[in-house]
Length: 159
Image (cartoon, rainbow, N blue to C red; front, top):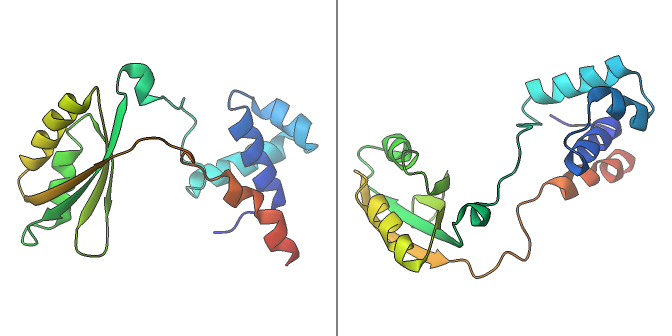
């Protein structure tokens, strides 16, 4: 699935000002309201735009520690049962299956380093987890982002 320059401009506009309505987006982009709505619907249906909710900072909720936990799991049961159990731990924000010596990588949050031990204990108790390794994030100099990929669309169309 590729996006064109108009899609990229619409995504960038909504990323910068997520509370804009379709009418205002169409006005700023210089296209008909129906065009903006159709583009937005298509981008959503194809999974390019995955949400419109607010982004919440875990630190603002009291979770000041971010850590990455790598898991080795029992290969007999596979990753789905483990992922399902991890999803039941509120402090587990993301789980990815990975290649290499380990099997899964999780981004977790905790209220303190001591609380992180509690979260790790919950993860270790998950049936199918054999071993974990944890690193604590000290800072986030480049937060999660995708807009540079969207901004690259005009260059790809010309090249």
